[in-house]
Length: 406
Image (tube, rainbow, N blue to C red):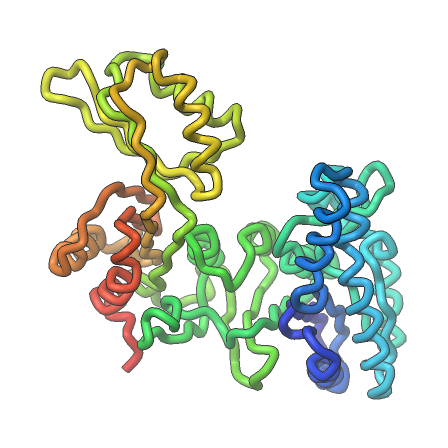
């Protein structure tokens, strides 16, 4: 007998028929003798509909009332799934975030979980009752409903699994696991049986959409074993595990990309102490996150070109900040470029293999793809490219690192 948390996203519970399909999957685990807690999202499209309603009523809204409205989608789903389970003869009870309770801070719309008091749920496991819990929500220090931000149901599920000391947290979605690349681009992408927390965290932060970054961080911190698998097919999924649980690491486990990047270049900036601090300090004060950075000093050492990336949605805000600084930094021009993509390779094997970057750069050069900016960590290399090369670059790197499925 095991203790499981099963999480189902919006597409998995998007219709009554799909909710009944979820109930069958939950019943299977209960019949196997397992303690089961289920975490569900709102039905597909409902959260967006609720957000639009808030915007229609008030363009500048009270964040507390925003959370009251947008958290209501999960209330419908937990009630329907509980009814579906009861119809199958399974004892089930629905739990809203405040009923568990899931305790969070009071940053409405982007709350962080501080504690989950699940003693009552554990008591009910003794009576073979399934707990059907609302994802994405909790209760803040001000005793108001809070929401965790988009994708927060994954985080809810992992946090509940940690609190329950669950043997595993199964994330059911519309894909059947984690692939070496986006199968829509790299048609020879292979499904991974296992991947480490560290690799999954890099992939999630670099554009892979399968798991939300915060949920992977929490799973790694609390050593919660995750499995990603399909709601619609009975196939083995991908396990996200400790590094020690994988005997031999691939040099590169995956290739990913994100179009959520924009490049900014400050041309002919005075090369003197304090300029970079002034530029990046002003951007930080405006809540603009900077990612990749490169600086080229001119031959005479008096001026430099400074290039960096920001989120594509932040480009206008970044340009507004930089225009106000133009005279202070004494630069010739500020040139934005939203037509870029960040392509990354990730793999634990990079720690012990030399020449990974050289293989990456040579493969791209052979296809005539120019690299604009480079950034690295211990287990990843990212490059900034012109957006038009996205698909070619992903397929090229996938083949170069021998990831193509046979």
